[in-house]
Amino acid sequence: MMGTASTRHDMSASERDRPVVLIVAQAFKGSMRAAEVAAGMAAGVERAGGRARVLLGSDGGDGLLEALGDRLSRRQEMSVTGPRGNPVTAEVGWLDEAVAVVESRMVCGLSALQPGERDPLVTTTRGVGELVELLASAGARELFIGLGGSATVDGGVGMARAWGWVPRDRHGTPLAEGGGALIDLDRLDPGDPPAPPTVRLTGLCDVTNPLTGPEGARVYARQKGASEEAEARLSRGLDRLAELAARAGQPDLAEQPGAGAAGGLGFGILFFGGGMLVPGAKWVLERLPFSESLGVADLVVTGEGAFDATSLDGKLTGEVVQAARSARIPVVLVAPSVRSAPDDVHVESGRGRWTRATLETRTAAAVARVLRLLPR
Image (tube, rainbow, N blue to C red; front, side):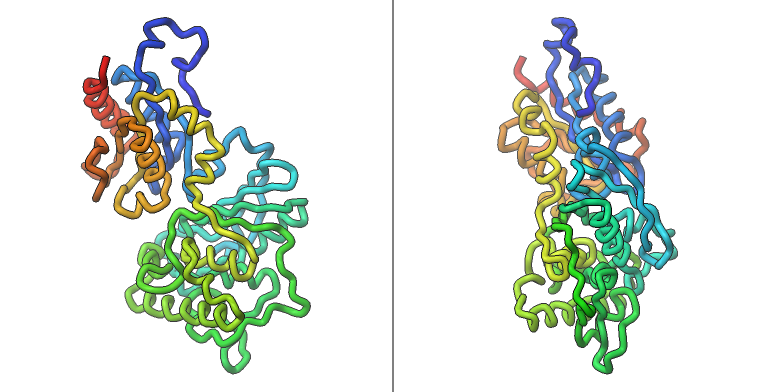
């Protein structure tokens, strides 16, 4: 836990009388890292007269390792194939000698590309499969994979290529890398001999989308650089992948919540890796002193870069908001963009992209308003 001076045992009586404000901070995508968001919010809370208690959180995307912090026994870096075939360096966190945690975005994410390089027709998750193999060789027996922020829509086929799987068209020709080629998928050869991963895989999902259908992985294709035409092609390719899974006796995998996470990498973990999927935000919060911190809080502050209806569907801010409401603790939502929020949530938003100074000022204003409403 990241704390402030007000959490010390030798605090004065006047400090103890100040209301406790629990902050659950995460990165504001594309503008501020989680630690910077936490610092800005904490400064705002102190300006407003509250006593900040800070936790860093994540829902499986940006900031997952940062949120785990000192719960990690060690960190290391590994070099694997990036989303466009370029080498990238991914950081790995170890919870113990046999359990590792990675963020897939560091391997196949938008952050590994320049804006002009984004093209889910050709980007691949191959590096994730390579990383699994490297970690198995390093002694990992269990691996948690954060699935937020990917630049891919290849259904995890790229990952499977690293394990010997070969996707082929009806002529038996191997397909090119990327989601665009899946429209021609006719069969999946598992390699000779098959080489399934020896590591138990769990995907940490930031969304609940299935692989296919109108709410499938296709809905995030545009933000990864796809045109309308490319989105339709990617969707048909994922349909082919789901058909092959059904033909192999696993017709329900494509509909599992989270199968569409990271452009279908969630599905790949299920189908190729024999793994499982869990909500990332809940997984992270369970490993933080969230419940006990909530139990002593007078007010909760959380936020993200853009809050909308999907934020209440398994993402970190939604989980925090719902937990605070269930505990009947007032909650302040601080975000540059808020499209919809529960009526009983105090919202501070608007005016474009924020700096840390803006975040501090807006947090201070919102917290001060709510603290005046609290019973003395």
